[in-house]
Image (cartoon, rainbow, N blue to C red):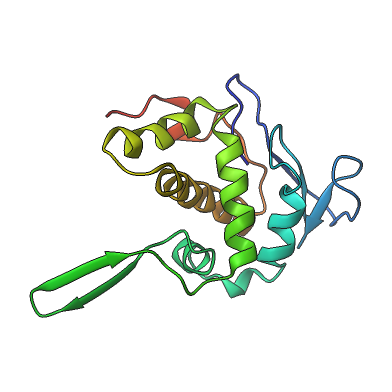
Length: 167
């Protein structure tokens, strides 16, 4: 679902009956929303893998945080008394994490919005994999909203992609 660096959407969702086909040939979809691969949407892992791992039951993810947690994009916070530790989420769906992270990593090459999100943590000294997980978390919010609403991703309606993010 990454926005392209231009004005069009690089990942399209179109309302209508679910289509089933091969990536790059026919739209792939679920739950009344058809999805097609965007540019650089994974080398071997694209929208089809994301859809296969997420599934077609919208009620499974009542909020974007539940999707982010299952995908391993959200960190785990452990707190006790005055101590608070935030760490990597090991307990997650590994295939979904691989699909989302691959999608996010590839999206930063064609999307100025994704590139900005990925560059901020790196500038603060975080590792590249950490930065890509932060970008994956941002994309999961967008994916979840489009999926729940059954609407197409539109880069012009995506406020973060339309306006530069302040550092």
